[in-house]
Length: 152
Length: 306
Image (cartoon, rainbow over all chains, first blue to last red; front, side, top):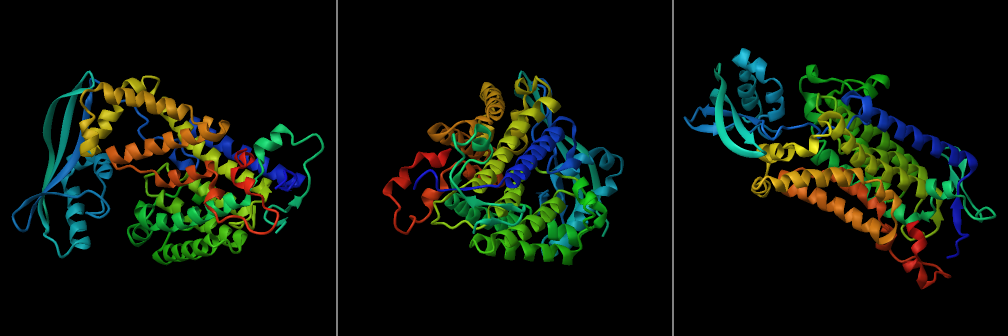
């Protein structure tokens, strides 16, 4: 194949391609430098983009339930579980602490999504707190943040 | 096919301008074999089908659920796209699957590709309109928009095309933007001390696999990892700048990075990983070109990398 066997673009074809690329790159840069999530697909790349102090705390929420079978289980906070993610619970932690009745939504979701499985009688929201010193976990403690007796 | 209807531009087979191709033209629209685009199309369009069922798979459940949670992104507000009803979501799903299956065969590449581009952007932007935005779809969305602009590209066609080169460059730049702007985001939101913090310990403690949690001790492992990731992301523009084996080596580094985040955190970023393929001489996977006058040297031809 000779080098001359190339399918070339017209001037207009080159021009719109150059302009599109430049506009796309400008938007991506703008979004990352000053934009917010609202600008998606040109939103800033915020995954793991925050500072965690090596002498700070790592908090992770989890929800425990007493079931209608009398067992104590960990509530699966994901799409296939109760359809409510851990991040969603964590984002609303303070409002749940103020008003534990909001945990009812978890029991309602279990009834709606998994009517054939054991249901939740009582829900307990915990936070596992890992204390760091120089980037090393030195203490792990469990805090009960809220509990709720599920309405039938 | 030699006409480019989508942009109104005319592609034509012609010798390069006297004195060779100017540098900016070689950078913007490098001539690459059409077979490379043909192979990438098969992978991208089949992946998009998998994506809407495996990854951005909450669009139909969201549409069936509570519309109160719907917070449309700017893009949807600007284009006046509707609050998705279950029927709307199902229609999009059907359009994406049908469009992808046609486009993956290489037939009607502009029409089927445009259907996929529009419907997939609509779909993913719905998925991101419930208060959680993911960052792994930029390159894949770009790929669905630029692949149709190449027009017909057959698996056996080693003809080099500037339109093909531009489409691949656009996907490559979207990949690089995802990495490089991740480094920018870390500095913007985490400050210059980000890499000396304990973000990886935070991640491993909260969602690490057994392997991920094993890396918590001693802490210098994850501390070094933070510097490594920031450095590699900042150097990602080299993916476009480098050629040949150095480029492939860097592609392998990024693929390894994704494998590591999957093994330690079960975060896979597959929609981006698929687009890493745009850096590779995919035409070597295609059936050998047929017809007379195809010298064996075509297989080892290095110009296809430029």
